[in-house]
Length: 148
Image 1 (tube, rainbow, N blue to C red):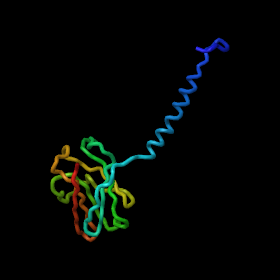
Image 2: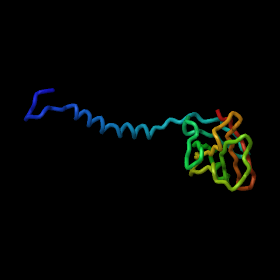
Image 3: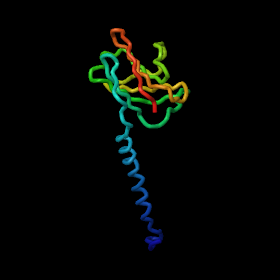
Image 4: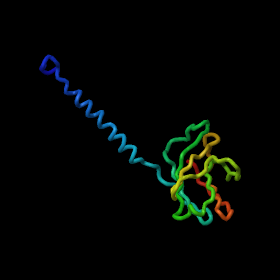
């Protein structure tokens, strides 16, 4: 301990500790504003539309509201969003049947859409990531990617 001044010990280390605590929000903000995403999967064509998925992270699916899901971003070709009536992403061995289920519906406001893909169980080797797109003229297109 250093010499006392006015009967109290000098505690300079407390000033350094407070400075570090004040810098933590700066580091957190920088980390939050510069995310690192996995690489985009190959682009595929669905009739007049092209699309490429990108997982939000490399983590396995997680439980959300009692359902196993994984988050993806889907980049559509420029101007393709206006041709899409409904787009759905799902995980299965075969393309999904069109139904009233709203799970896996793409949403967003630009050519980069996002989706919370439901998994019925942990993915198996034979499962594929299916993108099914319905256009305004009523045609339905599907394509798939392998899940590694």
